[in-house]
Length: 216
Ligand code: GTB
Image 1 (cartoon, rainbow, N blue to C red):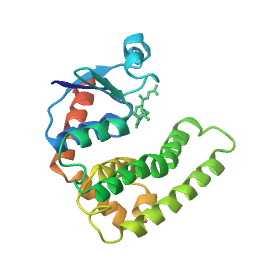
Image 2: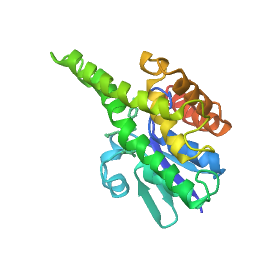
Image 3: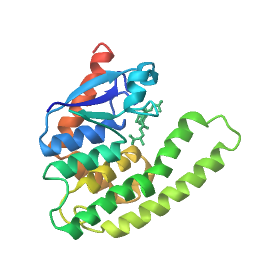
């Protein structure tokens, strides 16, 4: 059955792979499932057809036969459950990998995403510097704990899993920042994720969309 996902027709990140279709593309590449992409504009994302798929008018969405899904974490989980390669077989190891998926999206991503939003939307506010500092303090606390847990390991809990896939996509938003550079084991962890052939294919595919949309 054909898998179709949605992505920005012109991503505001200019093809840096930060939009959340990237994690879905990467998961599909890891398990070797071909997929098609329907590109959407900010306008079409607010239209009834898209809102029926994604109640909040966002990307990504996922369609496969009768199944329509939204929320990138739920989509990655669905892919990982249906195909070998992203979740361990052993039940306890599987449960721990799923815990890392939630940790990535619930514990690590919120302050990182809020910081990114603040730098775009709140720069002109008189309280901007205080807000930024507060967010960075929270991020450092989270990175400190994550770095200690990862230690010298290659991945968070044994073999590469959907937990690592989501965690790397979340940390990638800090790439090039001092926040990440201060934790060399986390920076190396992110680089290991980016070095995976499946990541590279997914990144190239989303970048090609931006390049084409920019007339390049
Ligand atoms: N919880 C949802 C999920 O994980 O699927 C969140 C989805 C989401 O935030 N989608 C964003 C979206 O559709 C795109 S990825 N936004 C449009 C809207 O809400 O109207 C978030 C994103 C946006 C822009 C950049 N960027 O420019 O760097 C990166 C990531």
